[in-house]
Image (cartoon, rainbow, N blue to C red; front, top):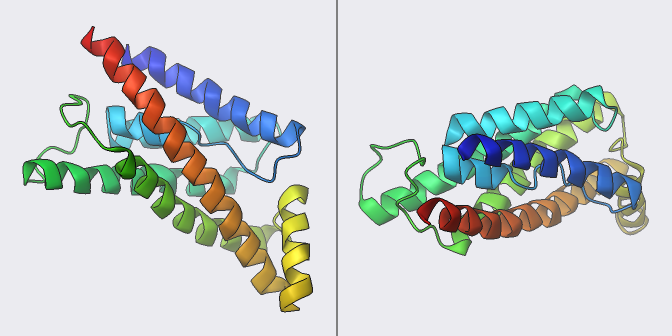
Length: 192
């Protein structure tokens, strides 16, 4: 069942990115279910989902391979968040694999995973973007937000960093929220 869910998550991650690009949403949507995969399978499943999703999107022309590091950061920060909630629930850090799904993670665990991922992705993604595309994000929809912020700040570097971070906060909160509900459905299916 976990393998089928993993394949489903890869399809949703890639499909989300393609959809966002085709309907001009100023979001990335390439990690919609990475947080759920990490909650279900642990760190290595989350990283595998991140790398395979982003490399698939790279080879199909929807992203560049350096942004895989951002997606891996999403899995790592989600895992750290779930590890914290597991410790909070059980009082120990012994189990690093969440495959047993004995913990009923609250929605705030998923939202916090999204928030920490957003800040890590905002910083890392902005650094990568500034190296690859000076003063641009490489995504026209995000650049439009940066231009609006530039009108207020009159500092293009600051505007680019703010727009990337705001975009990531929105993107990763959507990912956390969606991951929570998909995780709940997964738990019901495996417990039936």
